[in-house]
Image (cartoon, rainbow, N blue to C red; front, side):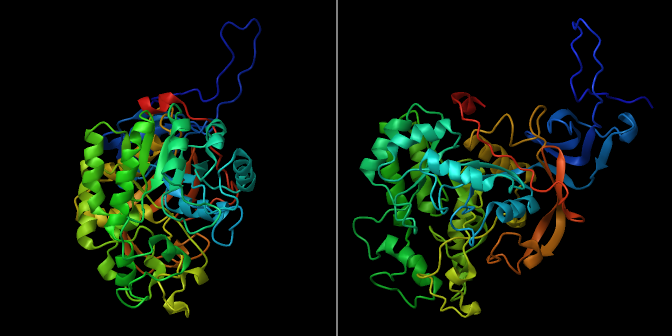
Amino acid sequence: MAPLLAIPIVPTASLNSSQDVAAPPEAPLTVLCSTRVILPGVETPASILISPTTGKIVDIIRSIPGPSAFPPDTIYHDYSPKVIMPGLVDAHVHLNEPGRTEWEGFETGTRAAAFGGVTTVIDMPLNAIPPTTTVENLELKIKAAEGQCWVDVGFYGGIIPGNEEDLVPLIEAGVKGFKCFLIESGVEEFPAVNTKDLAKAMEKLNDSPTILMFHAEMLPPLSMSVGDHVLHGDPPLAPAGPLDAYSTFLASRPPAFETYAIEDIISLAGTAPSLQLHIVHLSAKEGIPIVRAAQEAGVKISAETCFHYLTLAAEDVENGDTRYKCCPPIREGSNRDDLWDALKEGLIETVVSDHSPCTAGLKALSADGGDGDFFKAWGGISTVGLGLSVLWTEGCKRGVSLEEIGLWTSYKTAKQVGLLGRKGCLETGWDADILVFDPEAKFTVTSSDIHFKNKVTPYENKTLTGKVCETWLRGRQIYSVDGGFDEKIGASGVLLLEPRTHSDWAL
């Protein structure tokens, strides 16, 4: 059979050239195909044709012609009946380098991402030291990341009191958006902002191609909790019970913390009507109607939630098991149901990890000899590299498709950070960031499945459905379940520093 396609991978000399120039040899074509491929809006049999030279998808055929249809040296893989999906874009990850590399680092965090089919991560401005609040600090982070990243990495900037003059230069230096806290963050170098700080920042950002993201918790004017102090180890003013009981901690961060913050954010929207606002890690169902009403009123506001809010429930957390502590907290199972409804509706647009690790000692786990005090333990869930399996395990019970999961974890997260046109779905001309997923495989999470630095996660020993079998970054396989990580290629991720443009929002 004659080859179906012979696609030139490296451009040859122009036909108008005045002298003969020998064309460079073409690199072999790579073809990945399956009876189940997640393309925009559809799951279909397809073949993905990739240039190993550019790392781009050069064509997509909605059939499986077979290896004889392609040039003889083509690298051909038929993964049927496994699923080919776009690599995940995790738009909320704390890699903590430089400054807190005992918590996490670029090498370990991105290796864990590759294990789970995540091909792009966007690093939060904290908890590294220094935080990404100036161009100078961003440059330190870039220097720390170089040569260490297994997947592609972008960066957010941070907003703290008094740094409004640093924001536009950070956009020009390539940050993908900004994060701020309306309640104390838990690290002294990244203080919370007040209404006046926010107004100054929003005025600076109003006409810029960026997104302003909020940790949306605030202490309401009247409360039985000291709120932000619980991150520093102080108990609430009126404990509802033992400090190693999750119910006590949950009562200290009520839904009112989130709703009060969201209402305050919306009240400021008129300060910068052109600026996209975004609520990170929405956990309280009570925030959903507030966001809906603002969107219907024309406010440019979106929301994300996290793998843990969609899969874990407060009533299942045992005393002293501080692996489950995060802020805002994991709430009840009925609350989780409402988050799923809002996600399916499209009101919550994206699902991210909010991977926020720390050393085992900072978790104060009673099982490890700590006192299990939820108010002393660091607040953060370690998830990067497990998210797709975690979400599919719960999603299967709720009739969710892999097409929907790809929308929430790849396409819309790429849109959030201005990477559509390059990342987020399988399209001709886009990066060949691809994962191969076995939706039927089951595995119990053990230390061998945990590649982030500190192997402390509430998912340990849980049985999950669906496993990432391979991860491809820009046309190269970087991980496979059989061969592990390609140490010969090594950390081949690039830093995504191209400045955003207003055209991002048109895609």
